[in-house]
Image: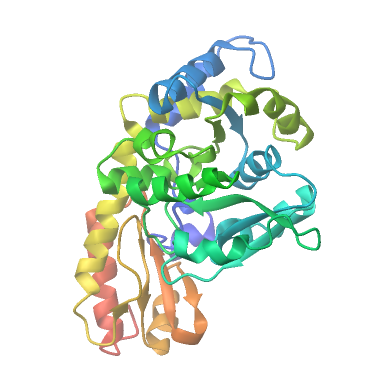
Amino acid sequence: MPTSAITFPKSFASDNHAGVHPAVLAAIVEANTGDAPAYGEDAWTRAMENAFRAEFGVQAAAYAMFNGTGANVVGLGLVLRPYDAVLCPATAHINTNECGAAERALGTKLIPIPTENGKITVADLRDRLSVLGNEHHSQPRVISISQVTECGTCYTPDEIAELSGFAHARGLFLHMDGARLANAAAELDCSIRALTADAGVDLLSFGGTKNGAMGAEAIVLLRPDLHAPALFLRKQSMQLSSKMRFVSAQLTALLTDDLWRRNAAHANAMAHRLAGGVADLPGVSLRYPVQSNAVFPALPEKVIADLQRHYLFHVWNAAENVVRWVTSFDTTPQQVDTFIADIRRALRGEVDV
């Protein structure tokens, strides 16, 4: 057994640490039957494409990908020209945690915009467009938002619609990094379509791995003029799976009978349970509102060190002692309650948690 499985009772570092949902594993096993055409010419991929159209609308086209960084790079690559730029929150995953993939692979410029809670607004964007038409500057072409944001907050449908209206009036595209789109839809009690197609999003990455898949992401294109180029850019970007049925089957499983929503809603509920259990503790303050499956508390530095001897989680802002706790589809109430009890003990100086 791996050492980490023995040492740490439950990881609160990332929903990437969670296992695979049994229904997704079953779908992979079911797909492992006989031969099937390669590169997506199979029945499982057709079913996946139909499932995405049912969720996003008949105009949607979905393309399975290996990972979220690849999905973001392919999606952005479909709409960017060599001299273009992407406007995004400073905390955006494409800016902070994708190792410069967009810049390296696409040669584009990311223009990070400071925000208070990970969400950009029309007011944040207005001054950034004064360079349009100026040959000395990279040209803003895409506004990229994350749903949910890296701060765990959610854009509402109205907020997204305002951004898309602003973008489209100026000839820009609205891209969404939807690694945790399921968590946002579950938290806001709305459909995925309400947060994307109906709100004017042009293209997005859709996350499955953080919500119970073994390893499956997708790009979803909501503009028909982007469909044909996606086939070539996906291949060129090394995101075309030969045995695609095993990736497609995972996505179809998540989109069947609202499994994506149940998984995300449970993860969110566990985060709210965790936040509720520590919010009134002396020495603890929540940095951002809890609107998904992430909690961002500020803790005494010594308490962070004591807890990390027994639990996996990341420091979000070392200067201000803010950490990030993330729950997942398989986090149990008992695990959360045990963690809360150990946090309380650590705050009292009982370091042998």
